[in-house]
Amino acid sequence: MIPLANARNLVRLPCGKLAERETIRIVVVEDNPSLANAIAYRLRDRGHAADVVADGAVADRFLAQEGADLVVLDINLPGLSGLEVLRAMRRRGDGTPVILLTARSDTRDRVTGLDAGADDYLVKPFAMDELEARIRALSRRKALDYGAREAIGALAFDRAARQVWAGDEALDIPRRELATFECLLERRGRLVPKSQLLDHVYGVGADAELSAIEPHVSRLRRRIAQYGVRIRTARGLGYMLEADE
Image 1 (cartoon, rainbow, N blue to C red):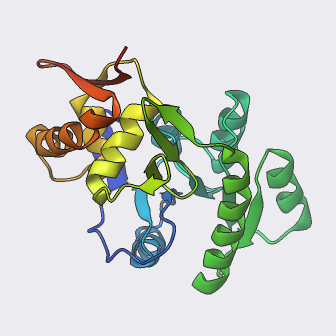
Image 2 (cartoon, rainbow, N blue to C red):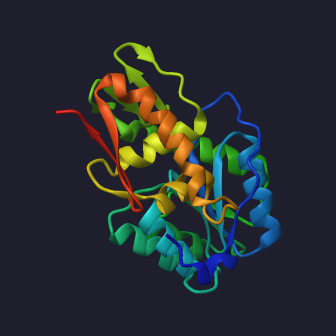
């Protein structure tokens, strides 16, 4: 969880209407509030989840702890530069697709960014339509890496489509319950604190109490119990997802 002292570097934007398309979680690392908010609003309007971080050091910790499906990363940032954040991601084996943003158009700068591990590059100012197209392209590429569904009990989770299956039946799971399941599955067999679930489901810095996660866990628990999957509660600590023996 990001320390509260750095909360000013995180912007929680209201959820937009979910579109009928694949939803991915995108972290926008940009210290220009107008640009960052414009990107995040556009992404949310297209049905994606978006967290905004305005500081490189905070972004580094956030990505190491929480991860993302895709990162839109400015190079010139306070704390750590975007290139330092990117190099740190690649050193720890994080292959999340990264689109670098910069005001510099010099070829050497683009080469430096790509050599550091960036997947794509956009020079400011840019059209939002172009950013969206590049995100779609990288999302398709990432989906190929997901491979087979991840099984637990009698369920299988398709990460690319963000869909839970029971045999040949796709389960109709509400968005926030699905996000809860996804977070618990990523850490299956380990205790997940309520605070971490809250950040994953509502977004970092959201104006929501820890208790807000409880009804989602409760409904999800009832929904998946028949498939040999249970959610254990460690009172006051968090939750753990596991398959029945």
